[in-house]
Length: 193
Image (cartoon, rainbow, N blue to C red; front, side, top):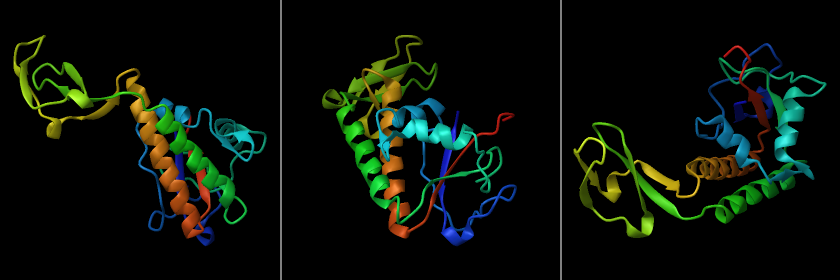
C-alpha cells in the first residue's frame, strides 16, 4: 500500500470529495517503493502506538477518511497529526525515525551500472576509487568514478537504503510541518490504480 503525506495550512483543508489545494503544500520526497515507506515506520511509535498501526487504523478503520484527496490516484485523506497538541509526539517520532536510520545504516556502497547491459557494480564507500573495469557480462568498460555513481546502498540489504532515505525525509517533513503549524494528512493509493 502506498502512503502519501501532505501538510497544508489548516484553513485550506477541505472535505472529500474535493481535492486538497496544490499551491500551498508541503510533501516529503519519498522513494517510489511502497514497502520502503512501510518499513520506515517499523519500530517507530506515535503517541504510544506503533506508527504503522496508526496509519492503517486511520486509513482502513471503522471510520473512513473524510478529508480531501492529495491528488489523482489517491483516496481521501485522514488527519495524522494536528498542531499544537500533536507537536511533541510528532517531533519524538521524527527523532525516532532518524535514530532508527542511524542504527540500521550498516556499511554503505557506491553503485554503478554498465551502460550496455545494465549489470550492477557496488564498491564499499571506504574502498571507492576512480578506476575502469571490464563488465563481467558484456566486456564493455565501466567507469567506477565516485562522482558519477548512481548513489549509495546498504551492502546487506539494498532496500535498507531506500528505507533510511524515507526515514530521513519523513523526519524533516514532520519537523517542517510542525514548525509551520500545519496539520499532517495521510492518504493511500486508490484500489483501482
